[in-house]
Image 1 (cartoon, rainbow, N blue to C red):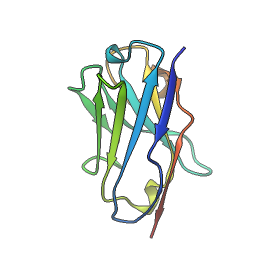
Image 2: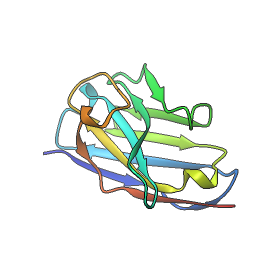
Image 3: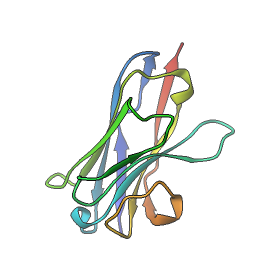
Length: 124
């Protein structure tokens, strides 16, 4: 079984930055793609970013491209999401997820394991 634990969510002013972390345990982290998704109140869960097993290929949703950066440290079994220039519309619960394959895609069905989420609030 895979356990994913997110951290780093907080209240931040618009224009500010946050770094989310997600530590994984229970499976071979280094061979699996990882993703970040988010869900705002009343909205559907949407993809944010994905990274392949090696950390060499990243994908981003258009809404965060140029502002967010996904990265991973396979030695620490951890994936990160650096969020810069945050906007009020970025406020959501952010979830990390682990795929069953090595390539990272921005589609939910590729992901078998999910964390509990961490809250990001952005004040205007």
